[in-house]
Image (cartoon, rainbow, N blue to C red):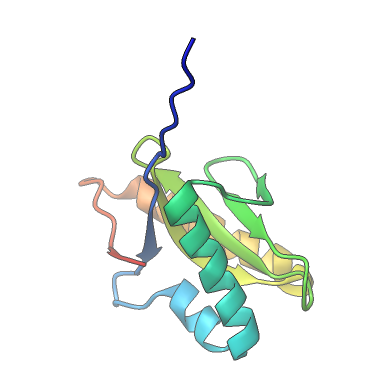
Amino acid sequence: MYLIDYIVVVEVKIYYDEKGKAPFEKWIDKQNKNVAGRIDTRINMIMETSNLGDYKNLKNDLYELRFFFESGIRVYFSKIDDNTVILLLGGGNKKTQKKDIKKAREIIEKLKEKDDGGILYKRY
């Protein structure tokens, strides 16, 4: 018996609304360099190894990457294209978690309502 190693390529994309604004980029730009750097490292790890690290399924196509530093940083995302593409929706922390989850769910519902199935995004 042979063990075959393979890596599933994961593409990470950033969601943009109809006005060309990205909630994730708006949020990450407000973070200090240490926080932004750690998040960037994690996202790069996901793209290179397909390992999400610590995350939680929040149901209905919404997930959160969990970070255990600062005040419990969270990055909200959805999976598309047979789970090989991750769409970054936004971020926050434990203090703003309920509001952030509500906003991410609204984005997902808006995407589901689009007739053409089009998603506005750019690669991470």
